[in-house]
Image (tube, rainbow, N blue to C red; front, side):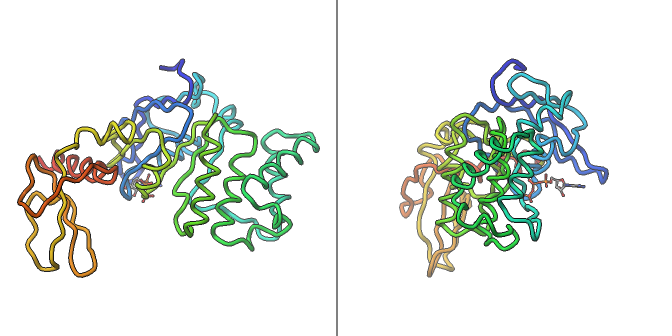
Length: 295
Ligand SMILES: Nc1ncnc2c1ncn2[C@@H]1O[C@H](COP(=O)(O)OP(=O)(O)OP(=O)(O)O)[C@@H](O)[C@H]1O
């Protein structure tokens, strides 16, 4: 395992001082490409991301990037890491271009011309060249996220960690952000943590579903959906109509509800077969975990 290309996570565990077990033996292999990390609030995603970014240490477990032991030599990883956290500081007053230049210097780009080329290429990539004379503190939310990714891409990282990137972005900004990520993923491990299942379905080659610090499922969106072919059903209900006990999800709709059931047979003749979506797989994985915990 340690010799694999890409990222290998072995049996990672972390319990905080307050007793919360945020990671409970997580193991994963992630090849270059886009990898999605899904999970409800408190699942342990940020803990995993911060640990991978060497911002905190696990209690147990090992991490390898391209076969190198990350925890044994965290400084070496930091040179090959890009991390876009949920919140980025905007450093009021410093022009965005200068800030990128300073970060490039910190990443070991000590030749001015090399730095300038990289900074201009990144500004072009994230479509901020025209406004790069302004401090990032004056940017809109979408511009700030794009600036964050330019910062994270300095030094052509081998591992790019992106935590909840598109919260609050309008659809055009979200698309632009996704395009930059998809371009990057051709030769980089891009780990994308999000609550937006649709983004993972559209963008990621593979994904993991995490809850209570444990891995519930891992694979390609298609492979994870396969076991649910032929066992999902949907129907529209009036607002006050009773919902069958097999209901997996009840989605509000104007004037009523859309009900999705998981059952071998259609619960009744109002239901039609529903091809499984990643969203269904996600809810089923959480539901199975909840039932197991309650048993
Ligand atoms: N510094 C900390 N001290 C104590 N408990 C923490 C700390 N950081 C996180 N936790 C707890 O660990 C668990 C996992 O948190 P984490 O932030 O990793 O989850 P998450 O999946 O990123 O959640 P969200 O989607 O809400 O960001 C939660 O129960 C959280 O309350």
